[in-house]
Length: 69
Image (cartoon, one colour):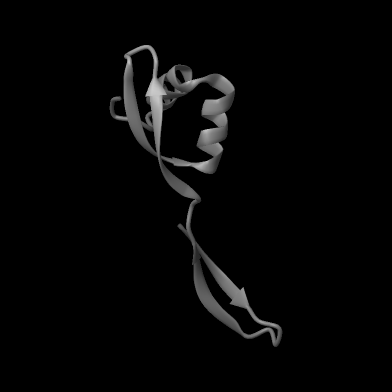
């Protein structure tokens, strides 16, 4: 979460929060023949579409984003 300002037309500033674009999504993991439920960002969905779920999960685990899957 990042904080910033809402700026109106009169340039009056009020504090606001920027949240990540997260989704709860189910993916089918063919290597293990099961469904995996992930809370994932829009960028993460694009990475899974490009690389495949198995490779994306293993890279995320190597980088420390996942404890286990």
